[in-house]
Amino acid sequence: MRVTALIMAGGRGERFWPRSRKNLPKQFLSLTDDGKTMIQLTVERISALVKLEDIYIATNKDYKRFAMEQLPGIPEENILCEPVGRNTAPCIGLGAVHIAKKYEDAVMLVLPSDHQIKFKKMFLTTLKDACELAEKNTNLVTIGITPDYPETGYGYIKLDSHEADGRAFKVERFVEKPTLEVAKEYLATEEYLWNSGMFAWKVSSILNNMKKFMPDICSHLHIIKESIGTSEYEMVLDKEFHAMEAQSIDYGIMEKAEDIYVLPGTFGWDDVGSWLAVERIKKTNEFGNVVNGNIITVNTKNCIIQGDKKLIATVGLEDLIVVDTEDATLICAKDSAGDIKKVLENLKICNRDEYI
Image 1 (cartoon, rainbow, N blue to C red):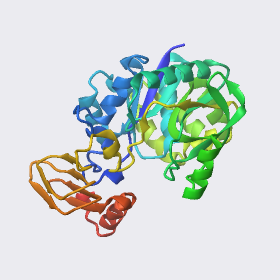
Image 2 (spheres, helix red, strand yellow; image 1 turned 30 degrees about the horizontal axis):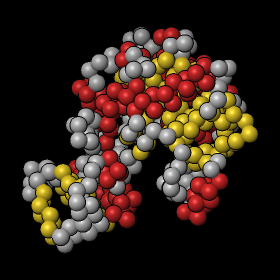
Image 3 (cartoon, rainbow, N blue to C red; image 1 turned 90 degrees about the vertical axis):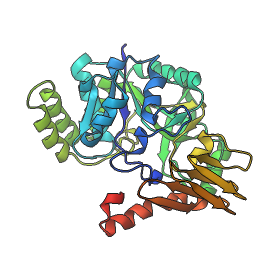
Image 4 (cartoon, rainbow, N blue to C red; image 1 turned 135 degrees about the vertical axis):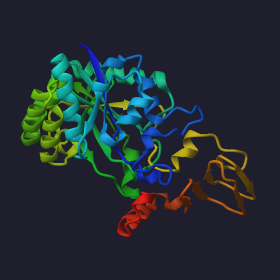
């Protein structure tokens, strides 16, 4: 069966402020030494499995030009512009009806646009295994990451170790982000995986489950599908997408459906969720610093310092994040990186939208 892919690229990447802004979010930025943007790396990773003509990008209309500039091999009609953010279920549904309109049925991979993968061959092997399992019956497959420390920033998937299909396990339940103590318990059981937000299923399987568990969203998607390829498409998409309820695919489908399998992945995954991820992606120097730009450091240790043309000089700093852009500078303790979103909340309250 033909393999297609939907890459979700509509997020704002707020934890990467001030580099990531609403007019140029994280997925269209380069955070690696090769200069490639995150979405370019995502497409490149799967190109041995999925033809470019079968890769779809779900983003919003403000980001369409970035997608077209950075991914010239993707057909313009495959760049799906959501009129408004409605979480992952409507986004995935939009991709599914476009693929169904073109092929009737196919295996559909769903991947975030802004993750980092260290071991590409192992990743591709896992995707192939997921596609093979998805092709069987009506299986919905999610890829879980084997945890190596008690992370509190991810949701978890509890697998049923007594019911397996090859390397995959039946999912017992999905659980929300835990406390540190609970995360330690999860790690000790060896029965929990990190929820990566990556999926594989047949288009027919996911749409049938949407019809069963999310009938309102499914009815709007059906109307959109009928308009694809017509002059009415943009108008219909705008009307029907605005009418949909915002809902995640985990809550709407994965926590309720049958035949849910999880395939453990060990391919050097990182969700690149904050500036702290830069330490995991890039090499640190002899002082434990990750520096980029015109930087001079004196007695500075374990810092992330990102600049551009302007000289940044640091003296006597430790465990800080310093990010300088043309119009804004962030100075943040590393253990407070999760609070960067609060800066944006304050900017919104103060109507300082030019910095968001």
